[in-house]
Image (cartoon, rainbow, N blue to C red; front, top):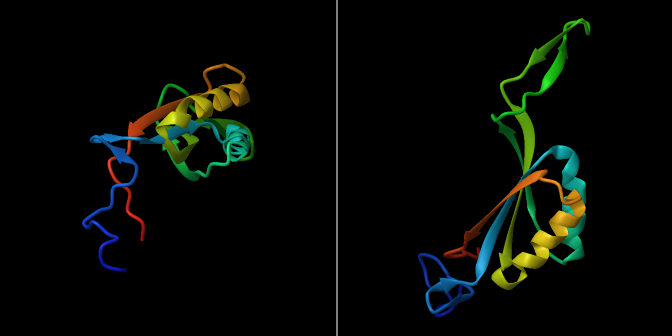
Length: 121
């Protein structure tokens, strides 16, 4: 690491007048929707990280038990979290692309949060 190029303890990138110009989008979605979402993100020349998570919400997932004669209702459902960092000016483009992929129905939850700092290691 060369001196003068780092402002440890963290390096803030894209900051103007104290306001963050980058946002973190977190998309909570069913696993079968991930391929379409990733295709839309790649079409915008963006990258994302995918996490496997379990959701304890209204929906319950049922699985066959034993030799297929019974079912068990799980306390959770499997979900995926797609996370990405986006320039604030592109948020509307990303949201529109997600709406097109999901068919306009409410099939995902999107959280938009400011990014206060990025560390490049």
